[in-house]
Length: 484
Image (cartoon, rainbow, N blue to C red; front, top):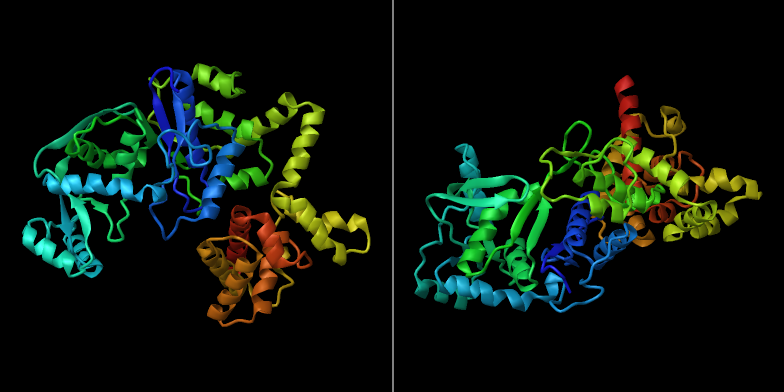
């Protein structure tokens, strides 16, 4: 157990590929716990039943383990305050919600999605920020009971003070004041009986004895809601720390639409986890030039939570490449380097399964690098010439690539079968034969029209690499269409 009483957590949602920003926040919490002699806990926040999947949860676990982070409690290791998946804690939250309703701090809301959307549209038309208008705030108890007994769907919302402001101290931003008029009457319990993030977050942090909550600055505006829930329940809130968002070099928010953000992408390209964590850890410490290479223990030693910057953390890929190169050259023995290479090439069975697919397509082993090398390449060197041999025009090819890039995001479970089915469905939606849709994808994935089977190749490359290759293909094709 913690020697200091300090307990921190990382609480990702398994709704997509693990984001590098998740690891950035996780590393801060890990270093904080290590520095303070505390405990680092992993909790899976899967209250979004429509988007959370076991596959994505496993990817979260795999990504965090790949980085070298270790947690003392979590869904995979257990602990005294489990379960550590919110979907398994559903019955825990309801008494807290009912207490808030009983004490007059929350209320049943029967507004339909259609009414809420009309309300928001009217507010936007007046230039007002959309928020709940209190339509069900003063319903009589008898009416509430009658409508619930009739089976009318409802949610539970929290009441918000009408005057004044929420004043609190943040470990990064200092004293913060947010007027209550800017805070919405948040839904606490959804119609299906599942809590929203805000309710589950507070209850879980309380029951798991979390002392410090460190998360991204995008959650700063939600603090009043959380503090109010703690107050309504008569609980002591944790200390809050909101870290600056990771940004691209142009200061825009780091997002998968602009740049690769998935941990699986950086793993697939052959970055060392030690180098990535070294790179991310530099955002939290003060060092002199020439002291950049630090392992986890050295990062924890230099970590100072009282001296954090509010400036955005710039995700500079060139600096990451430089650090990664130094780690490979200076920190690995030749034997360790070879072991890393073989482990990397074998990731997701890329090498072995790729070689099996290539067996029936070659006459000499020397043809393997040209045929299957794209499975291990950082990029495939796409140029306008790469697409020149296609029967589709650049504009039609661009439409195919962009449609596929968008629609593949709908796939929850990434495998050969789901990829093939989605591409067949895309072909139908585009009104094109599958044999018209696939050639541009062969080129986008491999840089060549002669390649391994497409569906298998995309499954082996993985979602994040496929996403990036389609993005590069789109950029090349856009330049071709613009030049016409």
